[in-house]
Length: 302
Image (cartoon, rainbow, N blue to C red; front, side, top):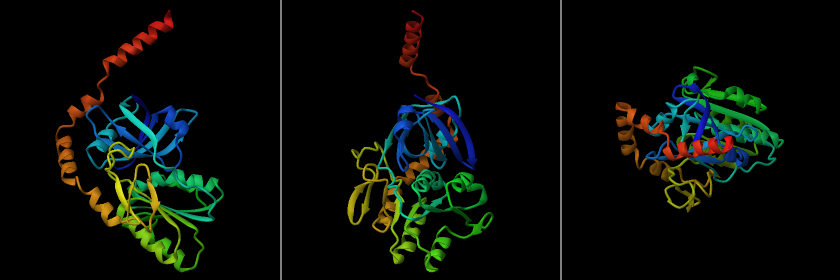
């Protein structure tokens, strides 16, 4: 079991968790993720590590409640626990000194982009961060991104905060004005990442995206996370999750991610009608673990 040390809301349906996982906290690097299972009958979902603290032995995960499992996780709080947290998985971000780096986060993708933006700044790059959301209420980690960026641009679809428009707008403007940009990292919804790739393609700027595709085991065994990169099949969990944006087939990725949408919608509908059975499973304490704890306590007193 992995105890939840702290949990707080960042926005509507977006929650930040601080979870005790010492081994993962010691080894994780920017760009890597974990596979989480809430209870014994729960599905496995990939969540990118937003931050890790080796001294406290904790990792930070940011979860947007869009389906049954993410909404179930967001119903938990400090004092609760998660059954399985496996990781760190995936290849770390390729952090080096490029020059001027533009880091783009769309919605909750900002949480995934943040650790890499920080690492890029520490590596000596000039970091320009662009974060976007549909509305002001959905903008997250603005202060954190500001702290690791030389320049921060915030966009909202409806103009309720920052500049109105898409994250690709300021990127395109800078490229068309001839600004030297050496590397672009984009993380967010599939349409957004595809749009960033098409924006930078004519200018031949190296662009990388992080793909959060369908995953089950996170080790390449199930094959569920296959993606097409340069017309070659790759596994997002072991070959990625970061890939050259100009080689990713976003159309195939979108279709694969939509494969189980009817089942996901039905599972969410049932959960919203009666979440209690799942909550009871989450709060179940393994009797074997109780016996082990009692045995350990007895040995200490002897």
